[in-house]
Length: 369
Ligand SMILES: Cc1cc2nc3c(=O)[nH]c(=O)nc-3n(C[C@H](O)[C@H](O)[C@H](O)COP(=O)(O)O)c2cc1C
Image 1 (cartoon, helix red, strand yellow):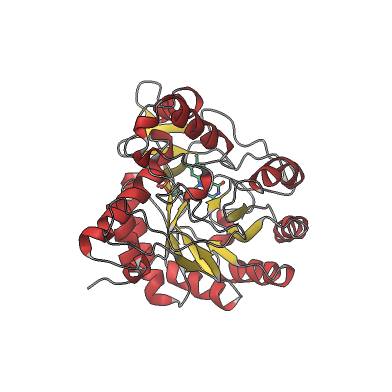
Image 2: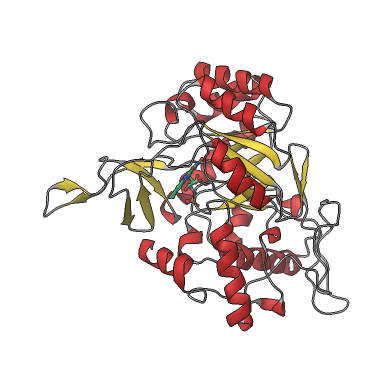
């Protein structure tokens, strides 16, 4: 999966790209109105065919559709935008409706984690392929909030897509300091607090496995901003519902789940762990049943909108997460094996709704029989 990811994103624009859709209306008009508000979206290409309202709302933000990308699997989108652009130029036949897919085809774009100072991440190797998934121990490598604002946010301001900024820190003060800096920028629509990364020694998952600490962190961040606070939870706990309730009462507006599942791979011949750090976070199809159950558990436990993720690679997966209670669904590791995963899934999701006679995609949320 990983070597294909590199091929896909860095060089070949065609590999794995099938049936991609875009965010242009059939007449070529952008899906988002000039003021940035999402339009009621219809991708029907035949006169008289059923239209589907793909809009969902998340903690007060109206999104054009329920799809986003999982933090850390799409950087800030620039590389993918380049690949999509090259596909449109060189192999337009791969893109359904012959429209150019821009980043505005997604409901929201979630960035890689950003911390106060630059972080260099963990020693390599820090990626390992596994059956039905991958292990990573990247360690939240990022250039720090100042460079992120200058380089990534400035570019994202031109992309006409709601931006969720994922935030990491070694301490409570660092999370608040990152928010303080981001508050000076107009681009972020919401913040996603990563209290669930298993790959850093201080902070990260340590905050997300202790309900009191998690609540304290969210309370501090709550006082620093009026923007929506999405709290990203780890599955590596006894009761995710207890953590969900704690952060709900501390002021979270939404939850994002799940981050990766702790795991390890070993090289039998070398008798060494494959990841330099010894262990890492498992993602991809292997974790989907775990993620679905955590979404279901949190949907039962708290009255907050949920972003569901973990092994999503098809429209059917998206529907399953929505039925379990997610309002928004994130595509993560699937981006590495199919750089057009998100626009393809968006297209297929709309087809599913048409087949099922569903007029509003939001009617799927929590609609498990
Ligand atoms: C290479 C890699 C980097 C990641 N970086 C982050 C990150 O910076 N912040 C975060 O909250 N989650 C991060 N994650 C976790 C994903 O956002 C997501 O929660 C997880 O991979 C499960 O989704 P998936 O199975 O669809 O990949 C990362 C995952 C991967 C594979």
